[in-house]
Image 1 (cartoon, rainbow, N blue to C red):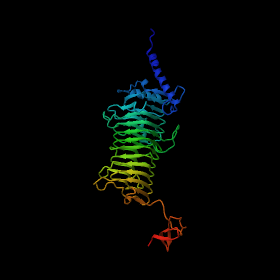
Image 2 (image 1 turned 135 degrees about the vertical axis):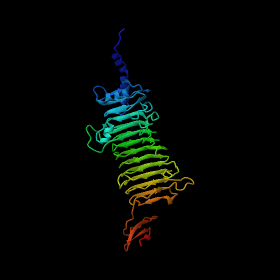
Image 3 (image 1 turned 180 degrees about the vertical axis):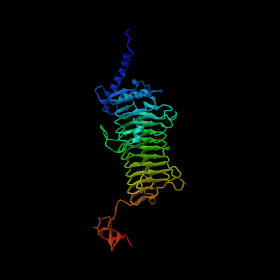
Length: 451
């Protein structure tokens, strides 16, 4: 017999797994997604790959895997690299993330990081999170990513204040990530104000794609930076707070094809930072507010707001303007949307500070036998906002069109129109303005005049 040393057996046992990882990276590279999904490094590359099983993590759902998982992340910290999580449920306490470290699961339904009972921390948290959020610096973690896994806050197991993910940083990516069942917020992201970024940097924006967050005790997504970030195809539902809460330094962030819904969500989309843009987004509510705006220059374009037509004061409002941090806020909003079945009102103009452009088509049938439901709007728009709210052609008395986007300016009598048409114009006669119409034969009739 030729006995092997324990270290040799360990090295030999680790080799097939390392080769397997390399094979996965090669296959993905051939398919054209290796750079985005998973790829293997080597000693000559800028980073390497690290399988958490090689550091003692079991993924059996009962063993505390914190030490092994953190060792794998720490090993990738020096040069940067990919930390790979094979299928399994990894019970863990708080794990610290670093710049240039990329976490890769085997798919949201295959890799689960579950908060250990009684931990009451974040499952994943960027390095120096507490210190950086207090100092409001332009530092923080950068150029890291998390993909293809699930974060389970395990709130029923003595985790009433746990989080899924807490980040202070910029230039990071989240993709195909599910965060649920947290005692507090599902995802928290923050960063400081605009400044020169330390090198190396590829700009500050975070890029978040395919994020699903639900059944959390706070906000689904509590995003206060970095600014100018991008959300694509994200869903946030059945959270106790807001689905998408954008505030603080998240100004200029753009959301596309995002959906928020749920009877336990007070607000679907909270636009509490200036310049937030939402395109083709869907607020689906069963009580509460669909879109709440409190800052300047926010946009809700090609949107849809769907209520469940619940009765009760203040129960359902489609679009709501509320007072902002400054006396002149919110102003300069741009709204183009459909609103359906919001029992209290489709639009609450209460705090509109003006210069807004609001265009909405409504279907507000009201509740049978319940007075005051099914209203198109409550409050009044500011005097310099442009509003066109249409409650269907069969309800002209419920339509609101104020300060339309055209004027008939006073002028000399225009040329006659073509056959089968008329031409409307305004003119001044003895200092008074008249609204007139001219027919094809040259006849002019006064429809209305001053005085």
